[in-house]
Length: 208
Image (tube, rainbow, N blue to C red):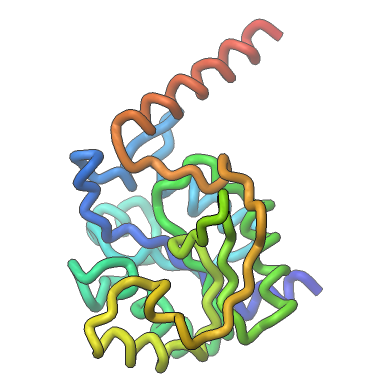
């Protein structure tokens, strides 16, 4: 049953951000020898979402890493442009939904992706958004491809924030999502925290 559900889903990793606070392309930042974006892609694969695309960013590099790439149709216009690009592609492929996440989630997991997919089937016409500490996480959501016309209309009216583009659409939330799973690396202090926690885990494994 789950495999049949997943067959209707595409996956997209948004990698077109400018990483201004980090100062370099954080998608390619390595943790334990694996780029951040590689961790996200691996979680998709482990959850059974094989049909995914990296959207935006350095296409030559991502293609060389073996990822299927979509050029952002609206570069420099924020994440909504990347979301629309992904929905256009997967709608043309007959997918009913697309799970779209950012590229900078070091702790994203198979379990999170599976939970998002299964939860979205409860209200398949709704956009599914996790909530962390009472804040909707618009960068990590399940989007029905049928909402594409609404998003395009908002985009044509100069709306760029996903939350504003969806104000007339149905929203389903996952309350109390694990903040660690959706912890994103935005700036050098975030990277330091991740590297230190990784080092502690290694020490614990060595001692055991």
